Length: 229
Image (tube, rainbow, N blue to C red; front, side):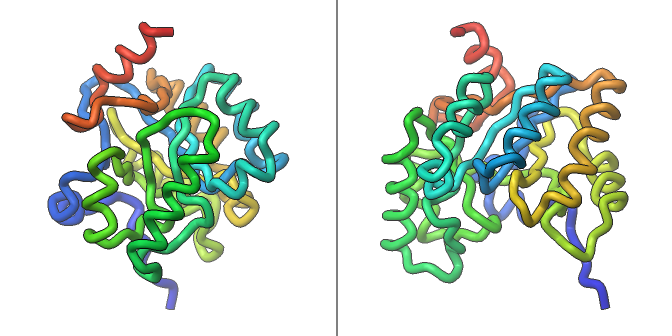
């Protein structure tokens, strides 16, 4: 039997993990595309080409080890005005990792990133509350409102696209993956999503890389970040 895939984060989950960032409250037609697991040769560069066609900005939650392996591709992310987030150094599953090892891995990723960021996304979206509590002191833990499911082999590209477009609304944080595993679905979804939402009047913004920790991320923070450049 094909398992049920939840493309939109349930309200109950958002309520339980209220300190995490799930979407950006706004009435404006703006979407926050995020990409996990890169940078990866060819895949990440293809993503950048697609985004550039629509003058779209996104947030890339990078694996530290991949940044070390592909510093030239990482440099392109920064040069093209996208924001960066921490995705641990080795893509650790928090549920299967002891707290000390998890924090050390997050810190290792922070140390090697050549830019400053207080954005963090737990790989697989799996993090213990005991791990999250100290991280929230100096990070925004960014989850998502819409999960494309591009990494799931049993989901067809058409279904990923249909569900993503159905659930995306103003302020949505949407997850895709610039990885080899997700390539089949992601390479189908991204250009069609950009075209469809652009045609409906949406624009695509990056999350602010160093938003104040005293309050949740908001659209005004992004606007403030843009005016600084």
